[in-house]
Image (cartoon, rainbow, N blue to C red; front, side, top):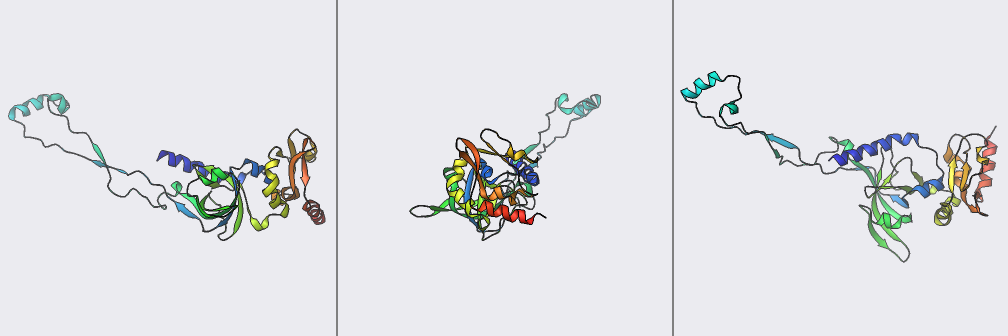
Length: 278
């Protein structure tokens, strides 16, 4: 039970910290993730409650006492204040505990901190971590074709995170306790919100880009800093997810150095952004 409590508290802390996520580029999220999958969400949030050990019930056994003789009564008067078993009598039986025979399953309402939040999903494609995903709990192969295998599974989500049922997503998260886990700090996006360049990079070039690292910075001019194996990224505006490089650029090795490589949508995005500046 203790390991469940520790694990549950860890997940709660992770969930509470989700509001303090550091901005990360899509490429960084992809490279740091244990798995990247394209899924369709099949259910709303459900709860998986672990089996708890039975609650012990105290059982007190009493011992029949015989009537003392007159001699014992006289002796007891002369030894007042001394424990009975020090006066030659048998010590009382200690408390004994027995397991309760009632069901050891508690409702989620009684123990909300011990439950796993999850949503049922259909995995259409595994873009990263094929062997890892296939061996996780609650993941089962359903449909096999010549090229791909479809799976049914559970996506365990952190507090305050809920994916829309019936919608297709790209998810990049971690494997915790042999479960597919997704927090608000991980990368998740509706499939129809991805740019054409991001979809192409997911299928081909993101893995190659993991040789380079994207470094977030915020000071003006920091994006021009040169560092070996690093591309500096200073997002435009207040929301990094609206940045043009977030959607249309990839940091990869080019001419022996890590450099930003922009796709065809980058220039159009920049024009739209500059047009919004007063």
